Length: 539
Ligand code: ADP
Image 1 (cartoon, rainbow, N blue to C red):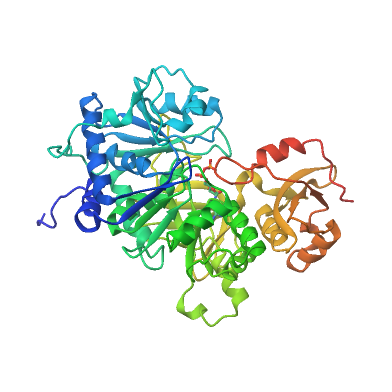
Image 2 (image 1 turned 90 degrees about the vertical axis):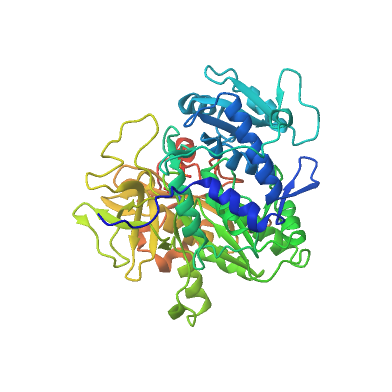
């Protein structure tokens, strides 16, 4: 065969080096436990990440070994994002909002040898101790307090100069990081991302129609770094040199808005529940914060409704909706307008932007129905299946089975979706959340989005409840916005024009709050449990 290009493996070390070489002075800002702001930059992150790598190697960590992090979003966590992979080890970000049992399970399953823990998280972490395989626990003193007796200090651990540190030569398919699914539909499962996937994903997600990331951006990473790599943005940030803002443990709407104003944030990332509370806060105090007009907000992890897109637009904030999964790296699709849409009325534009969107480059989508691959007509629904170099080939410590990977090499997402003629994908449900009424499927997500479009509604989740004749019927569980009045009849009348009569919920129950998963999705398993004896009032 003729010689083609150099065989240079894709590696996260390249991103770290770019961050220092070209954007060393660009700022990384972390909110500390006492709410003050700590400032550092890519040059310092580069130095400290390499010290961490050198210390891990000296501690006997071998290529492919897992090193855990139990940390809030901060510059220290960013050091770990780079320092662990450039030691050749596997960055295992532990989701601190999981139950102690689930955390204990994933630490064992991942085989973590060392875990880095924020000092303020030690009380939570100690609930999970002891572990059988973990050799060292290293405490990161983000609060500035002395490290408690009996623990090693991170600052001591990384004290040695690392200017002589040599990156290990790794195959580009070597593991770089591992994340566990949040277990919305079962026990958390480990997904191992390769260096190659992380680099390709960073390139893809940064493109103009995707997140349009550049060295001019100031990016607020509200989405947790302990879940799906904070959507891969920390890696992309070092590559393009955007400055980064981290909220630490302070996730209240006012705290977030303060940072968006003071740090001139141009792109913020978070799940819909965060932006819903931002919207409510801005509706109450529209003039309190001065936000750069056109600040982008990437919203994903759960569906966005057009009302939220429009509601934030009114405050000068522009939503970019995306869909992803731990099993990708993790972004799969993002929604953006094409030139032919820009003259459409605002409502239609919001509707397009609220779709899950177009696949990012390197991602392929198809819809599989009972009778095979479905046409892209916006109507035909089936299971969403995906393929590409940024899609997992299987789960950690589990055999690959056909209920996850098809014989012809597509990953089965467990999401139910359609794709329209222009290529926009819309999720209608998770397979397990669909409601089967009288043999016909009803999409809970479509009902939720429609109900959440009502101005008096803060949040709404729809689940199936039992019915003697129809088998299952939809029940809407609704949280009203503060100080608002609305009845079941009002809501039914409001959404009626968009649904067939048999698809409308028979019952609406008003509650003070809805259960959410650790990553901001409605916890439908808990709702179904709560209403397991509820019988629909449908005739
Ligand atoms: P888990 O599978 O445990 O919930 P993930 O965070 O990997 O953990 O969740 C991925 C799932 O989240 C997707 O399969 C999909 O059901 C849901 N999801 C993510 N983003 C969106 C979105 N924009 N709209 C609707 N559902 C979404």
